[in-house]
Length: 126
Image 1 (tube, rainbow, N blue to C red):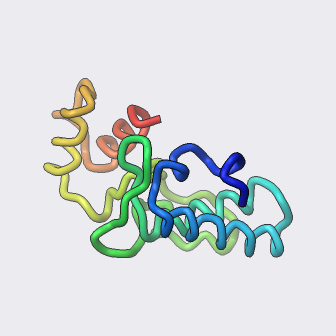
Image 2: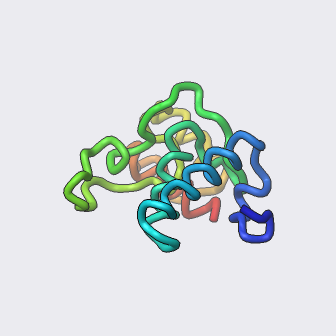
């Protein structure tokens, strides 16, 4: 994938993150064609091993689903669960997410659960 077409968050990320996204995208495009489904597939693979932190992707401590949508079985094409926009809900404690939200100036964070904190962090990072 030419660097000019790569999403900005990936341009600022490690070569491994870029390779994970690019290789999965190429494979998904062969399977599904050039479109949104291929890009969603590539991001899903990326989010399995990386987490969006600020304006780039960083390796996760443990591979695995990052949120309830990624954890659910979507073989029927349904959108079960909520996405946290690349923030690893499953791999962080509420206190860790709270600290990140505080650093980003998220208002109302003390009343938020883990999922809500992750979603607020994701909105701030975009």
